[in-house]
Image (tube, rainbow, N blue to C red; front, side, top):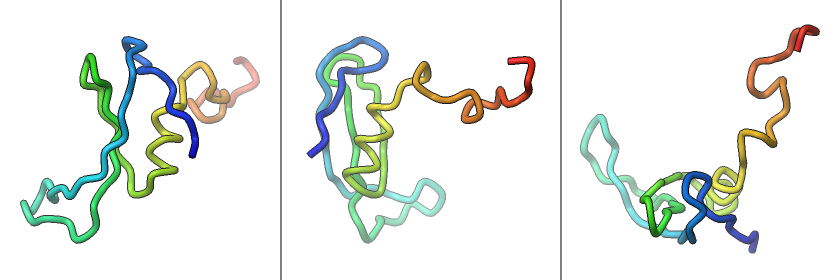
Length: 77
């Protein structure tokens, strides 16, 4: 399992949760549970369809993104 980094906002410990959730548009329960990473201090939250994806999204930091990922692809950057 990939290790969770601290919260990107406050640095506190995070927890992984797998829970059923609802479609925001229809109000119907989803058939497959979603994965969440939740900060135990400031309640920051990231969701995803798989455990690996939600951990990867949580652990990603803006300063680690490449220039092309954040839209700075011209030669001037």
